[in-house]
Image (cartoon, rainbow, N blue to C red; front, top):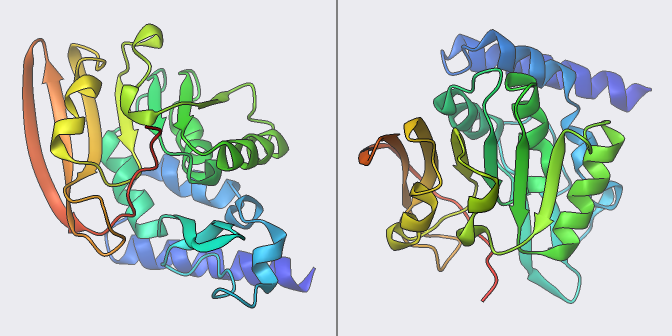
Length: 236
């Protein structure tokens, strides 16, 4: 009970800070942050980890949710709340938008997105089967398993058979040349893809967080800010 109260207090402080700094503006997203418990997307074992920094939800920093015990250098994080805010607000999700997410991020971002687009379909493509399983379990606990689907697949191939997609969100760094097959899966009437585009070999690389808008066969690209994302996990 004590930990839950502390987490709620941290959550409220974080949301207030994001609002005060004029980052978090969408009232729907504010409600989603309040409703969706970030801590439930982080495995319990990571709360008491001795090998990594202990999970600290509701600080404006990435949260570790997965690492390979045989090779601890292989790890994944849920993006910092400020970055998640930028990602989701930038997509400008409508109630019935269909959203394709490349890279699971433990399911937290998709759970938030569902509250913004409750009548649309959300599909996650995840290359790592362990992360996909963890994500499915997390979504089931939130009673979202029927609302958000998770498929083990190379994210770079997208899901053209289930498109067109009004929105595509890439949650890991990718090279610009890898974007083209995904752009063709966007809705021709204002489909939007957001992604950290740039070097994707190392965890220290810098990318341009970029939004690409489709109108017919025309694509407009806008670089928004410099970011540092882990490489998007793919399947050869």
